[in-house]
Structure formats: C-alpha cells, structure tokens
Length: 301
Image (spheres, helix red, strand yellow):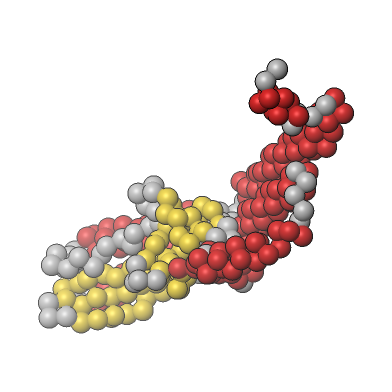
C-alpha cells in the first residue's frame, strides 16, 4: 500500500468512529430536518383548517359581508402561521449546527458582524415587518377588505385584500391581477369596506330642468329602492338626496347618497343609477348628454 493510501486511511474512522458519526451527527441532523418539515406542514394544515372554518361560518350565516372580527381573525391566523414557520426553521437550524459539533460560543463574534451588516442592508425588511405588525394590531384592514393604498413615490394600489403577512399585503384588482405591496411602503391605507360604506351617485341634468319635479322623482326612487327586498338587504338606511352638488355652464349636477353594507357600495350605486335613468326617461327628463358624470366607480374585486 502506498504512503498516500495509508495517509488517507488514517483519517477514516474505525467501526466505533462510524457509529459515533452516524448516531451523533447524521441521525440528529436527519431527525431535526424531518421534524422541521413535519412541523411546517402541521402549521400550514392547522392555519388552513382554521381559515376554512372561519369562511364556512360566514357562508353558512345569513350575513352578506364578513364581520370585522372575522376579517381580523383571518389576517391574524396568516401572520401567526408565518411567524411560527420562521421560528421552527430557525430552531431546526440551531439544532443542526449544534449536532455538527460547531461551538455556539465561537459563532457569537461572526454573528455580531453579520447581524450588523444585515441590519444596515435589510433596513427595508425590518421596516416592512414593523409596519405589518402595527397594521395587524391596529386592525387597519383584514382579509376580504376593499382598500386603496397610497405608496411611497406617489403610486397607488387598489383591490381586495387576499393575503396579509408581517412583510407584505397582497391585493387582487378588477383585472384579476395580484398586487404584492411591501408593508413598509404603505403611506396611507383607505379602507373602503370597514363597518359601512357609502354609494355616491351624481346625476347631470340640463340647466333648465324643473328641480322641484326632479327632487320629488329622486325621493320616490330612494323610497322604492329602500323597500325593494333585494336592495333593502344591502342598504343601512334610505338613500338621501343631497341636492345640487355643482353648477356648470350647461348643466347642474344633483347628488344622491346611500349608506350600505361594507363593500356593497358599488352594487348599490349601479342599481340606483339604473333606477334613476329609467325614472327620468319615464318622466321625459333627459340626462345631459354632454356630461360623463354618470360613471360607475371602479370596483375592486
């Protein structure tokens, strides 16, 4: 046997060495890795089971919209599961390093340097996590809310909240696109579906219209809408006529508002516009063709 072969064999563990390497190194690492994967799947399964139960309670109830408590619970479950998974993998990584025989005390100094570097380089991530923490605890919005987010740089994002974590908020807009927004970039959050909402309908009319006749007609439209079985389930009170909102050279704009269930202002607004157009046409009053004020708000889905 050559000298090089003898040198290589000298580093191979004997039978006791192989036993020690297998049971003290490989086996613990494999067990902690499998345990982390199973714990991850259990957390995902548990969170999915809880969210399904929350959704089933909503579907089996007579409510047309989710309660604020259900929205917050849904968002909280997503955040708790995200934190739990991160903690599981961090703990598993610590145990793997320990099983490899690496002294933890020797990692303190390098970890301090790496932590400082990450602290400077990952400031945006820390900002996102802190913003997400306050977003959840303050209940600014939750799963299923219709929101409009003003972001840094002057851009906006609108849609229905489909996912909330400590780092990002995911919205689905009217085109079906999913918008992912880091929480640290949110400057202002406008919740369009918290507690109640308001449908605003502007009606452009010719300047020579008989306002008394128009007011009486719109009052009847509001009364009929409020007593309609379908609309009454969406309305919190009878639609009210605010009167003339603005006066232009060739037209006057009359405004009607209605307080609705959260997120139902778009459906109510469309229904009221349809009723108003039919009533005005029946009464022989033409909506001013020059104006495009009768325009449906863009409804986030």
